[in-house]
Image (cartoon, rainbow, N blue to C red):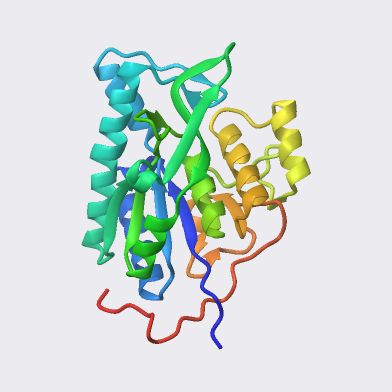
Amino acid sequence: MSETVVPWVVKVGGDELVPGPALGQLALWTARQVRRGRPLVLVHGGGDEVTARAAALGIATEKRDGLRVTGDEMLEVVAEVLAGRINVRLTNALEGAGVPAVGLTGVSGRMLLVKPAGTASRPLGWVGEPRLVHTRLLTKLLEEGLTPVVAPLGTDGAGGVYNVNGDLAASALGAALHANVYLVTDVEGVRGRDGRSRPELSTTEARRMIAEGSATDGMLPKLGAALRAVGEGASAVWIGPLSALGEEGPVPGAGTWIGGTARPPTLVVPASRAPGGI
């Protein structure tokens, strides 16, 4: 009897989203995984490109606790950049590497149902926090051997579209799929007070870093997303650079595992499920 194939939900951003070596590396790595029969869901960010586009339009960027305040004008920019430019670019790069990819947003199939994030004293505008995940569309695509590429937008189910932090979107999807969640970043991992990357963090340690303020800026939502994924059903959560993702997942000693020492199981795929032609 073959072992169950655990899906991977991989969140990417930064250099991996712009034309260049990192995007090519991501496409080739994804192609190798798909060729081996690994079901993958890619979730992408794109904050730097959103900021640049907003600035070109004269729209100021404001962030609170690492999240972008999203008013009406900013929401239009977010949707244009994430669902338009970046999702198409990433999907096209994957197709060029031989990956049968499908570009989506969290609005597709009501995949990410959200509630407004923020508080009355610290409002965030059209920023959503996942409250329910519908996996039917993703599951169907994975069963067909397709690789979903998801832009982090969500819906309130009543016509409202929301900007969702990419790490939080990936963690919510990963938990619902009982997947391994890999949050790719441009640093070696989660750094402790001594500035060194920690190979592992317990959930208690991660919460302490958030509470004491040692996790700041982009790492703050990453840790919060990782904690949510661990608590809601993800198989494992890892934070680290794309260069540390090997054939079997993160290479030993690289990046930071959150909430334990879980490791991805050995991949065993029945011959009838193994795709070809890549």
